[in-house]
Length: 283
Image 1 (cartoon, rainbow, N blue to C red):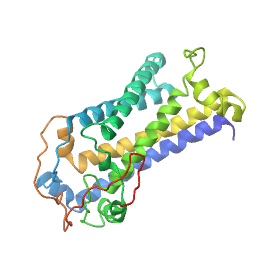
Image 2 (spheres, rainbow, N blue to C red):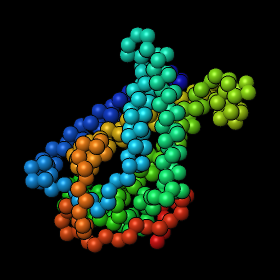
Image 3 (cartoon, rainbow, N blue to C red):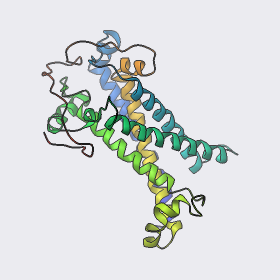
């Protein structure tokens, strides 16, 4: 299979996968109605309870990331599939500006998580208690149980997705900058400095190294599209009060105690401890 055929197959596979994801979300929502959870939330107002307000800084960063990733996804798809005439140049500029904004806010969020006075990296660390609750959390989202363990501020599936998202952002930033071919760094391009000298030597040319970076960049872009779609769906169907608070449309109601609106939940445990480099940690 040559490179052109591989590109076509990637387009077919990921487009089909996205259709499957949309169908799966529609089926998931139908179970929300069938099981009565939709009525409890939207009619009876039994939404998840929250014990902590969402700080302003993470909300601002999250909003910038949201807008930036949407712009990157749309402009990136346009660069690959121009769906109207004469837009490639402005779309590239939109892509570059959004790329820089998302990269800056990524490091801003990491600084906030690890070094600010309000550092919150422990809220995203995955410990033994989190992993022990994985099956129960998965059963709750699959409508096999009404019990959802409350171990920490975020459940284990949220933590795992957030960690994966972080690493994908690093990979996407690296591959994205590796696609820039303008020699503005002492006569070298970002592609030369990031992959040309080592991957280009292994593959036989810097152009071939750039092609592999483009392919990985395209795959991760599709993963972001799928993850963001699922994130929007869950934000609108699982916890709309938190989503409204995020956009400043309604202040989040903070309640004493725990439970998050689910049946027979045990008393919460402290968030797990760990180090800045840890994703899965022991307790």
